[in-house]
Image (cartoon, rainbow, N blue to C red):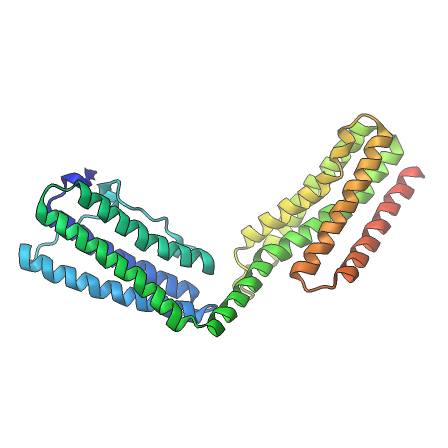
Length: 318
């Protein structure tokens, strides 16, 4: 791996050509990943990719004039300290906000790198070339802003933002809410049954922990295996399963933790308070993301929670 300061003018120009080509392919990858759900943003990235191709052609024409046809293979990973980008364009589905920020960061970071290298360069021709590359990247950033204003008009942006919100609900909120509800409600019966059957806080905690972990594993696999996301667009099944399983376990462990307190009455009162908070959180999430009226959501959640809670007490006291 070579230092940027050790590169010749020929190698710097070859690196710039490779950089423009890679950026073009990245933008085409963004366009391909966004086309199905965000067509306006996909069109914007296609335009940006075309601009990168034009700039590569200009750089290559200059290179051939100075150095001939042979173009050495030199890439980002061959140069120490050069800007590297994680392969976000390979991830599916792509997040709209993340892609927009990523593209802006690409142009800004590359321009900044060229300017810092220009400050350290001793050769006048290399310094001039680096400054030109930095200005080219600035023009790319301005182009992105112009395309954003032209293609992503308020109506198109609002439509894509609503699509992004629906995708977030499908991929994260729904499996997380299902897990939180299952963990918070279904584990109430075994926890309080154990509590009132034994009046032993440690044994009750172990039962609650086992119920929470078991429910988390079960719900995680059930969510992951229920839908591969290819038709519904709900994203990676393992991501949804992880979200669902984690939230299920957290929902069950929450009201089991108070039984680490050795005093039974204190632990039980605190556990009931935790249950009330969990049910309120569930009701708020349903109100915030699922368009359910808050009072209706609270009533439905509380009724279900109370019934399971009473079932556990009755079974444990019998």
